[in-house]
Image (cartoon, rainbow, N blue to C red; front, side, top):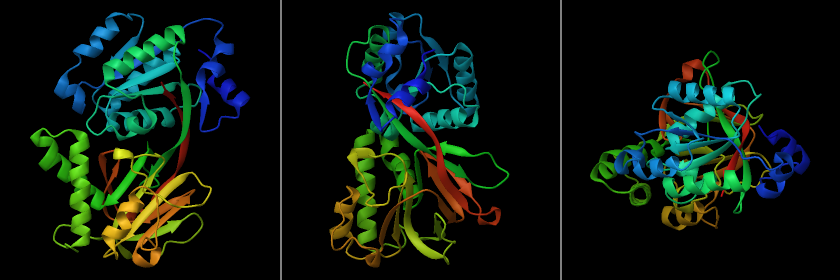
Amino acid sequence: MFSLGAIEAVYMMPSSIDLDQAIAPWLDGRKLRVGLLTNPYSGRNRRWGLRAANRVLADYPEVYRQEVRTPAEVAAGLAEFARQELDIVAINAGDGTVQAALTALLQAPAEWRPLLALLRGGTANMTAGDVGLPGSSAKALRRLLHWAATFEGEARIVRRPILRIQTAPDRPSLFGMFFGAGAIIQGIELCHQQFYSRGLNDKLATALATVWLLLAVARRDGRTLRPVPFRIGLDQSPLAPPEDYLVILASTLERLFHGLHPYWGSESRPLHYTAVRAQPSHVLRAALPLLWGRPNRFGTAANGYISHNAGEIRLGMDGLFTLDGELHQADSRAGPVVIGQGGPISFLRL
């Protein structure tokens, strides 16, 4: 196995580096060894099948393969890849499977940290859209395996911190890249119940859900959008008194679906945090620029729009939150949900 740690030390590991230049001195001409985790029940894999990806794999019989469906199977597959000391783990699945893989990697001892190559095999594929390989799963897989064997083509390492979510002191941590609560839960439910179930693709479904949420906020539609009380503390600040919010999100993704970048904090800290209070003002004038990280005179904290970069976020809350599309329950009696930094993890871009 090549020494990713040594490469990171030599390059002091900025957010991305030229992987061809970085890896070549350490490999001395040998191929990189690749393992593939595939979830056949992830959105695109389930709808369109795996025939194209399997045709690619027929040309690369040396690739280690594991089919996975549950977090336990993801952890077992990664444990087998660790025993083989593979260099790259490709994941042909959706955001939930990627989240399970991040959790399994970061809960395990740190002796093995492969490069991750994310393929778009799921429904929304928000994580892969930011730190994964572009194109269909089959095309991306062929490009990856060709590069691992020949180093032909441009490649980069993109290193990101991973969210570490603690819901109670006696529960294992969860790891992922996008945390959302409040109306985000209703948007996910809308996508699944009204859009995905009717065969709409992920881009159209998420666009329609975003427009629906914005219009509901602008109309102050309390029957559609239910504000949620939170007690919030950032970094060393204590938990504030309860206050109603429509949206809370925290992420280490730089781009969400459709290229959205809904953060505008200026602090030099690793976790993006954005909150929208109940009944914000000037919704249509403020929200559209803010979705791309461009605050204007309407998008202020006084009008209900808040964004910071933080090292730790604590949320006193009850109810559901999403971590990379998977739903989890929070109970304030167990203490606040603590969102900190885990990782970092290195992703391969081609």
